[in-house]
Length: 74
Image (cartoon, rainbow, N blue to C red; front, side, top):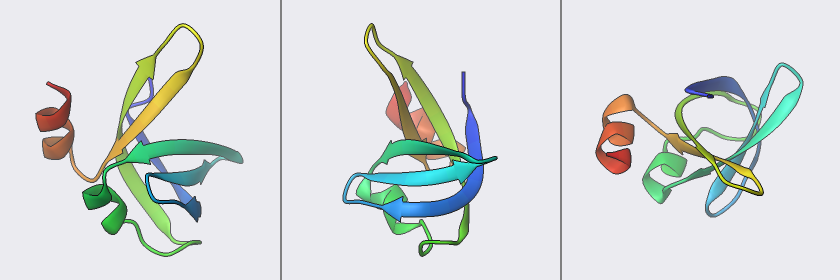
């Protein structure tokens, strides 16, 4: 399970961010609150991650802090 990502912001959308870590790009869905804390493209970012395993895909959800993650996941 992925619990944290630290890497370079490659792209940013309305509901997700693409983070490159070790040459791999991870698409992370996030709230507008979390996305507001993401710096510009090319900057380094660190996010707490919740990994959801579904039958047909794996989803990553990013949070700006462990407190936000704990409140929204529990």
